[in-house]
Image 1 (cartoon, helix red, strand yellow):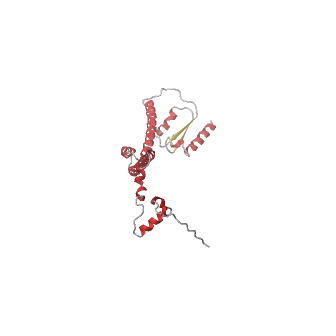
Image 2 (cartoon, rainbow, N blue to C red; image 1 turned 45 degrees about the horizontal axis):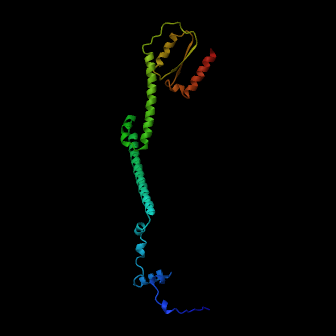
Image 3 (cartoon, helix red, strand yellow; image 1 turned 180 degrees about the vertical axis):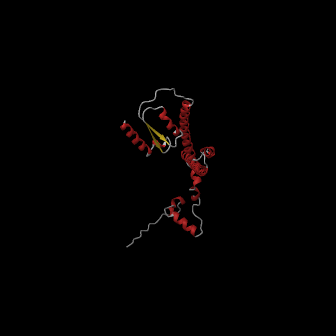
Length: 223
């Protein structure tokens, strides 16, 4: 059973101000009036809650924080856009570098275009390898030049022939291969010549070096 309690309101309190009449049902009442085409009780609610008005009415500390966040956001987007531009430039230069590298027959031609393709990481890798290779070749060339200068014009003085068994290992592709027939002229002992296929580099590498080692061992055991 539902009971109703009715209480009389004094006449002195008949007219109550609008502010005191606002209850939790006021927003619903406002929406109902708008749906029926009537005016809303408070038309300034939307303007008061706008973002611009909230910013303008905020405290100086809040405005400072918002300003700092806006600056950091602009800087972050600037970094993102710059990195995207850098990556695209690097990709473009890498494609052009690979085309030149595969088409060229000389490292000097590739080195000539490296300055215009500086955004590619392949350029730095190539220049490092090119510098290392150039240094090694220059060092080896200096050794060959020193040997050539030492042997140029050298004539051994007459001396007694060496009295000892000798094994001459001669590379067939070496520029000095013809001189192996001259060694018996300065050697008094038995001379054995072992011709090896290859040059004076390859006969010291596998598998040829194994054959050279066996021949040296046999020659040393027979003496």
